[in-house]
Image 1 (cartoon, helix red, strand yellow):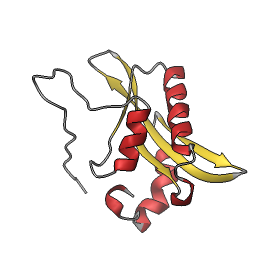
Image 2 (cartoon, rainbow, N blue to C red):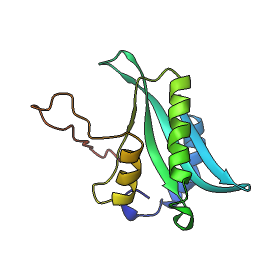
Image 3 (tube, rainbow, N blue to C red):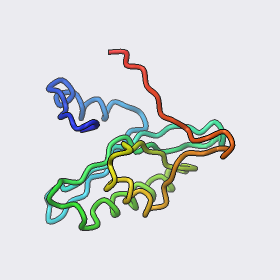
Length: 131
């Protein structure tokens, strides 16, 4: 998954129940002929600048053998439709700089760098691991 590492056994065991227990979390699954080929895990948040809800795409994946067939684009459109239905003012996501395929998809869908003021620079996503 993120960073090229598979999910740990603990994460696999707890992911579905953890998402189900998280308020504002929702998942969209892309199916073709009943087979799940892609997913988007999303979490509702809140924009203090807009004083409105937002949607963060936390995970986005399409099975490797099915990429380039419009599944990712369809998932992005479905996330946008759901975000609008939920009254979100924007959709956010994170993407690794080296993931050119995903970056191309996101750019084609209208996403770009997060910049509030060009003179202040681009926003950067930071983290501090607690466990």
